Image (cartoon, rainbow, N blue to C red; front, side, top):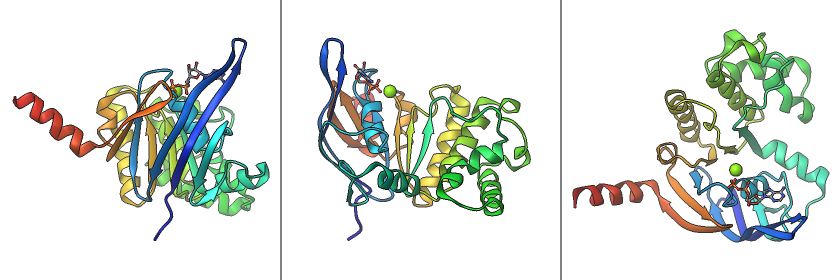
Length: 241
Ligand SMILES: Nc1ncnc2c1ncn2[C@@H]1O[C@H](COP(=O)(O)OP(=O)(O)O)[C@@H](O)[C@H]1O
Ligand SMILES: [Mg+2]
């Protein structure tokens, strides 16, 4: 049996605030298998980003365990964790997070610098990834030369450069208009069809509909976990009645 990509067991996070401890995530259980495409939904403040930061090993949980491809990372030393994160996960953020003074090629190659890949191979791989998202002709340009949608494509190329098993994307279409958002979602769908597991946060039902499964958060809890197919047939039934 292949290992689940993600297994969260009673995973919780409390933040220290002036008013005391604030429980943002309250003991969440979730298993995501290889090849899944999951949308994390829920209103602002429901704990989606807190959960994604734990999944991405960008933050440590207050309670519970988190297994990333069967490795319990909740108590892993930080250098080991950084290596595992770099090899396993590609990140995509709402604000693209490209470095403004670096060419697109160098932006895409950045995770390879941390992985210790030598220069020529970095350039080749970055070029391949830019070609994959249709932007190879901009390899030497700066991020400011291209549109927001194109910048997000470059960010996706950067997320792919280490051949990750998992892509985590927190509101990747939050800064994009609806047509460009559809194009970005088509790209995620194509990557998922190649076998990459995708977990994506959105509060827009149209965006979530591209995923195969939708998990909804409210007040730090998971309140529903449904296949998109079940959601669409349910809404079809409601419209017909
Ligand atoms: N670093 C932090 N310190 C204190 N409170 C935080 C911090 N990050 C998030 N929160 C609080 O935790 C709750 C969940 O936040 P978040 O995970 O960002 O929700 P979402 O992504 O669903 O909007 C919110 O009430 C937010 O104000
Ligand atoms: Mg958020």
